[in-house]
Image (cartoon, rainbow, N blue to C red; front, side, top):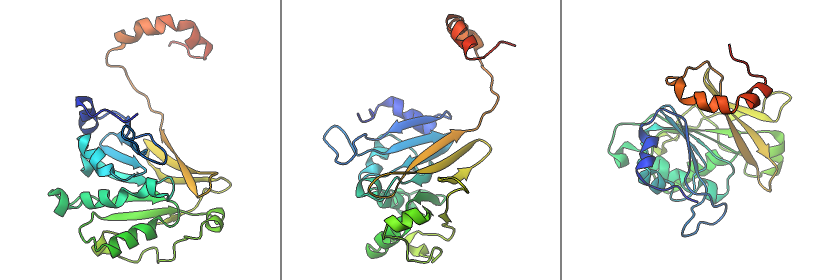
Length: 240
């Protein structure tokens, strides 16, 4: 089901914890009660969007999400129910539309053809008021053989008046693996894996790096640990 737009959604705009929200769960066709799937991941002060169905910008506004925090968009495939809302979102982030300061450029990742789609959309609709963005396409020989929409436009041709900035890359899989490494820091990494479908599609893997933490109020979990003591020991954990 769709998320409920109540005061709890304000957490996405103000909290520092990691949160995952589903802005719709329908696959192909939206209904009165379910929108096309879009997933929003908030980690610290950054917001990542996975797929962008038509009407995404309305979902974000209802959720009181600060669009200035959107830094990356990841596209599963090039079907219209995955990319239809991305152009409007980029336009909504423009200072001339949002009536705010210039946002940082948005990094967009997806299959070959995504760069051409956005470039031509903004060009033919004369959308001069767009937020700066770059597109990183996930390439491999198997994808190019299956997809006739392989990008034919120069990767760094500058369409700055339509928002596109220099810096987009063609990313290839890691050696000896069908895994694309897209982004990595000392805290988090995101990788992509090809899915076997009729059109080139990707699954995205977000992994937080392990780090030592501490409990501010350990007394609140003592009862839980005691109740599950045997199961915890069976997993190999020991108290120090």
